Length: 463
Image (cartoon, rainbow, N blue to C red; front, side, top):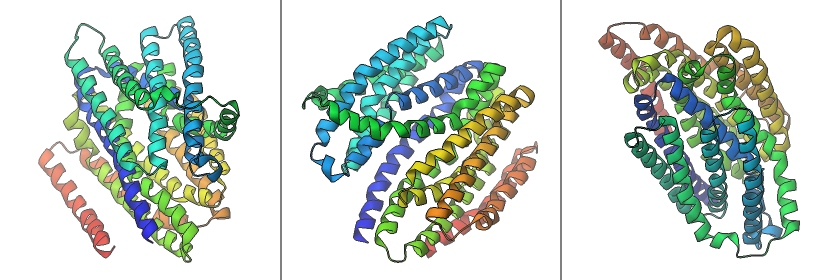
């Protein structure tokens, strides 16, 4: 149990870095909406999505390899050689790929300035991500916290400075230029700290092992990004940046739920693995923990659903307020995603991690097909329907697979029972949001919030 407590302490630090960086990015939304009109915000969101996809692609699955190899006895003693060889390969190979992608983007008429900046951001992110993985798995959570949070802070300050200055330039270009500058600064810092990753000789055999292990993970990572961001690309293809902007604003506010999920899952994942491996009553303990976590997810979703209307109307100009209902559906989607997180760890504990991509890739395919058919008919409503359905498909598939290999004692009935609470809050809050009298609206929501807080407090006290 002492090892488990140590694991919780370390994972809470890792989780706090992720939560703080996401929170900083979220707090930039009011700044963006003051400087960008809705179409520009849509353009920003679309190219941010592209940057995310490229950042994942440019790692070519090697982050998973490095994370695993550190814990393999046969690789641990030569981990620095593995890391140096991997990073040098990524820097050279991605430079070639990046130049090719930039040339291709010019041929098809995509904005060359934004494309170039996005490619630079993704290229710089490679060494920063590699260093973060190293810190996490070598037991240095403080270093990881400093790196992740300092980068988030420097990026935010750079973006704000760029928006207030250089007003003669396109605001979206200014944002991405600031992000590229922040990425370049940390690229240089990490390169110098690691002596430009030249401390060990390049070993082709090591690189072959890294790629063989890591490349199969790439489709899973890309499927996650498709689930989260393909809808923006489809909205732009079928409609315009105005619709992309409204939808993206709603999605970003709904992703507050993801911040909470990430914070919990950072401890839940390691705890699941540690208990499954070391505790005699693992199934009973994990079932009890999973039940409490699901209740916490439902309470968090209920809070988001209650107050997202006030958050959006307070933080953004009136032209963005149509995003409220979209944001609520995104919260529901991420609540469903929370059920996926509960069960997916069972597949890892059962050494069946290769089954997880089946769920994510299937859900990504459903997402693409539904977006293709629904967006031309229903617009942004079609996009949220596709998101809810695809997340549901992913959760059902993972539950089915996990039940065969590492079942927990809670099933769909338990999830649905407590899930009725946020569904009730969704219906009531949507009705209350239509009231013109703000005092009455706030009073009703405070009345609804009170029992949720008492229930949460009671659970904390019992724990």
